[in-house]
Image 1: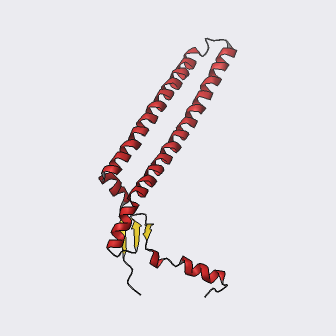
Image 2: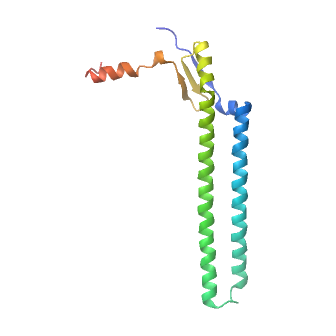
Image 3: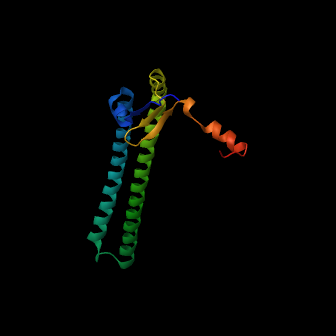
Length: 152
């Protein structure tokens, strides 16, 4: 059996050093700035409402004060949900961008691997498998043996 050649790639470095990757990073950063600005506006509004509430304590009728306090509490819960949603959306966007970049560069990885006799390419430092030469994949052999009831 031939010696299996394994290589690693640093996807983050490729992302940060390539023109396409830099463009994708700029998109992520722009989206983050927009979301943060939107969030900051909402927080500013919530803080203003809270300040209004504290300034009016003892000056409004009890039912009006209670109503304003409930509005402040609801607003604070909405802000917390908005923050959670924003974080989730940004994380999903980052994952989608990385997946897009990986799809973009996979043909190049495959070409370089084939040209250099590389059978496996792992992503460094996570060690995720990026490319596997078809000739070292034993799934078909295992599947046939399992289908035939042979475990050896």
